[in-house]
Length: 476
Image 1 (cartoon, helix red, strand yellow):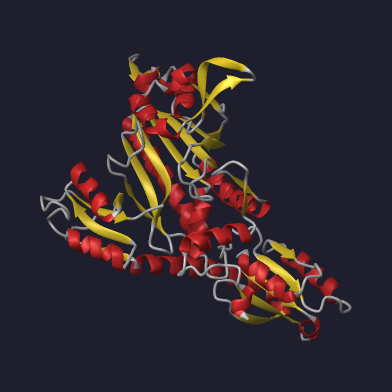
Image 2 (cartoon, rainbow, N blue to C red):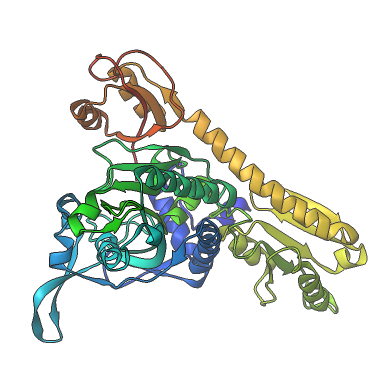
């Protein structure tokens, strides 16, 4: 039976990339558009993004930020103002050269990110220390002309939020950078049930134009890492390039200290690859658009549908509930909602009504539980919490099993080949070693974790004195 249900999905272990493509399309998350590397986010996919967005937006507002909206287009001269920044984004920029049939006097960039727009605005509105901090965030789409694309993980256009803040001191900016990184970690761990490693990016991997970049890294089912959110401390680099100054309490002119942080639709890709299985999606209850799907059994029999709808109405106060009263066969419905990763399926038929009970089926374990009607609300809430915890713990266990230590280059290479995942290894801090590791193994530095361990005294690559313990992995 199981085989028949999932015949449309390639096995994860057989071909993980194909499994991923099958799941995003067959679970109705996306459809492909006529532009290469662009995707249509379908209602189910967008409802999932909406839930994630609402959870994050609430936390952004609770930390004192206000939402704004910046223009889609950036004049070329404005993008050129911060040298490192423009060099970092140049290969991915989409240009607008014509308006109607007329060639533009100055090319416009379709925003790949909005630092320069915020900087231009801050220059106009920040004058005194009383104007600080400025804590702005925008929800928007951005365009980056990627060479290789994959739904959610890397597309020409994607949705995200980008926070941009300005502060009086370096300390305030640093505090903000870490605060927002922790907000990302909370959404990933508490809502999406994805465990993360928090740390700082190396100089090579940091954001173009930043003083320091911090990241939350997660590990996918196939042992590859995914950068799941970043927070950047800009220092005064952008402020100096754009002339963003304020008068301090002593009447002296100072440059502001800035931050920027972003969280994108690629976290849906992370959710798919961390929790999914050979039957399709598995969505943690806190993120799920529908937490409980009621499937009436023998619904043509008198009283079954009425009972199912009454059940839906009574359960809506404790969960997000839907019902499938279509004339499709129950087997088709079971398959469909397993594919869509709905946390709990509720089956109810004439015998159940007679016995004052229902059958609950967990998506994470596929376990069937018979629950008396008078205990249903309580049991359902408990079950949703249990599924949420189980998915997090399962993902954490997977990450622990796929995290290794390497003290030498041969060991690093062998471990990556034999057991793909995170590899903890010491590093001297030199770019040459970081590049050699990538060249020899295909692994990149994911982060210098906040929780440091002294695995040895020596760099895994050159044998010189080590400065940091670093997480390495192949990544999306």
